[in-house]
Length: 281
Image 1 (spheres, one colour):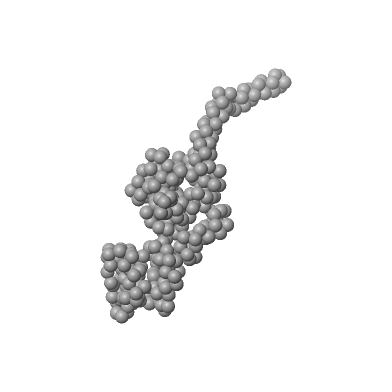
Image 2 (cartoon, one colour):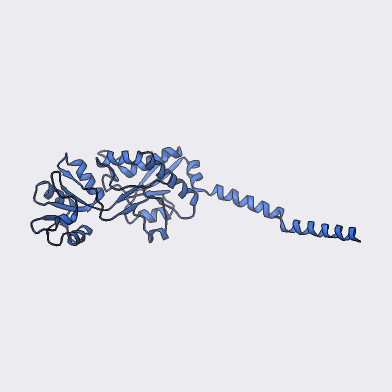
């Protein structure tokens, strides 16, 4: 009786174990899904196609511009070229603007976007972002022999600040130096000119422009290192493939930790990087 009961229990347990395990159909479906996922990987598609299609803004030197022959060059172009090199593929550049960069990415016309684009929560609803490969923000520009190193030191009626009306720089100048005289200009070129001519003691603008001006000034200008705002500039990546996001993150991180990012920053701006970048890899 006990032996019969034992055999019956064993049979029932075996049936239960078989019914709980994956069926042949389920195993085949899982393998097919895995194969489909690998086939659909954007990283794999780029490698198989032999081309990385990058959307790059080419109207804001030194981040992106064209040479006398119309060829793209600049900080973002160098990053895209290095990415293609690491992937072992050719680089295909498509020029984008502030208005077209996200639509070009979401429509699949480019694989990535490097276009001086700040990673924001609002934009992250439509696309993915890498870790920052550049940081920019409002910075102060002064003559090379200036004693001023901080905006708060400009709070005096005798101080003149060249500034664009309605800009973030204007708001910052009013906050830190409400007693200073604001000299309004139409564009950034005039700000630089006034500071170089000694007709203004300081100017405030985006750090990418400030650092470039310092590098081009032949030692006449300097930019104290403080950033008054900090905006992360990231690689734009399409939604739906975190494997590719992870690869781009690792690429950016390695280029920072190896010192390569710092080298090309100095190449284009002629100065040390504006802000510290963290490299988790």
